[in-house]
Length: 138
Image 1 (cartoon, helix red, strand yellow):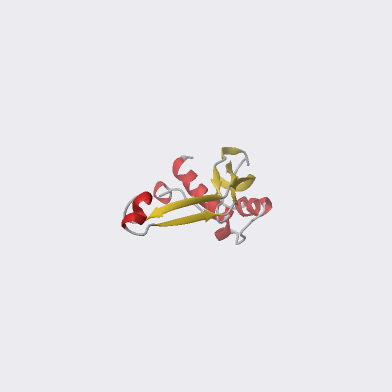
Image 2 (image 1 turned 90 degrees about the horizontal axis):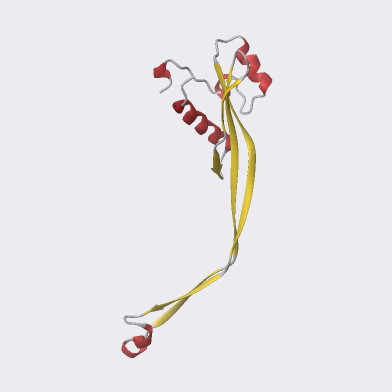
């Protein structure tokens, strides 16, 4: 989509060859290239929320009719299901994504989206970068 608009996008992993390049690595890479903007993402903060889910017991009546008449017409049964108490944990990550002017190193856009329990922060950063580039016209 961006190449259609004349924008070339290169991931640092592809260009620099490191999964987590330092600021100095990126600066050295862009120093002798014609690059207008640099997008960077980092983990800003995270919050862990724990919720206690109480135990629960439920009884269900089975049989062809209501439980009162079940044994009169046909032997009715009851089924009791129980759930143990457990703790539900939800982690919210705040990923800060910034777009910098390569010539001045000044930020031109900063976004702070939240997401829940991503399988990989690196994958999340790539998704946010792709989404941001689609919505922002530089």
